[in-house]
Image (cartoon, rainbow, N blue to C red; front, top):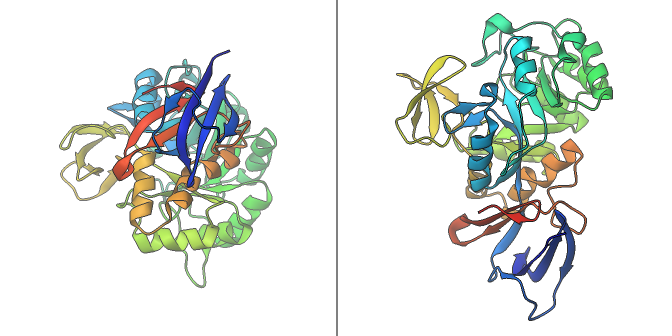
Length: 359
């Protein structure tokens, strides 16, 4: 049973020592002169938890090749993630869900299916050929699903949402043309999240509050892309007021080209895209094709927008952990020892996953 001591960490302004053992935080103390790894006063925060990321470094969750993605994401501070699949035929989704997911680096907690049970009207970059109404028996063939994005206006959605939530799967409303009343009904049936708030859904209108108004009223969780490009600063701050940091969850929504050099041409869902100005655009177009960010970058963007550092970190750690109901996202005794040591200029100096130093 390996024991690691990281001493002289700055835990929200309190200099202390962390004792890591068997993948957990076993003790937090303020003893002086203890042997261990000297953090030299660096800030310590929980590892980032990304519940919505499709891929990176030229790879996509649908490829099923998770080892290099887990290594890259871990090096950027994401210690846990839900590989997120795009709308595709069920046989492909089943095949992907059967691939090996236990690799060094970022821990795969399960899958997030973004489709195929979504709205053609708000499909975004999804392939409309595979969009369909929910089918519980079909869905049950896919392994280790933790979350699925659903358009609740699709026929049979309410029954589907109720069944999967009883199975412990999070139903997230997104890529949807739902109105307020239908969204409220879906929440009553167990839906507990909103997929990339503001994107691919009806807007918040003063007479037609839509899914955003319903989600805020019922205080369910809400994902938001905080890369400084997808959502205006004022809308990020408004969402924070609507949902609060205990419900608003930062996501990267990163796609295949994330992490590739500027100007790299790739594809996403069969559509040519190019990396430009830190984002991913449709090739030969000014239309956003997806996110090229890491979750830590989103935290840094939130801080630049005026959100307090600890609040921004909470929305990328504690809040998604509570959404998933897992013992991560806090630096407290008994929680998983997934940690980041932060140096000057918000740079990640060291990454620990399950008590082991990754980089």
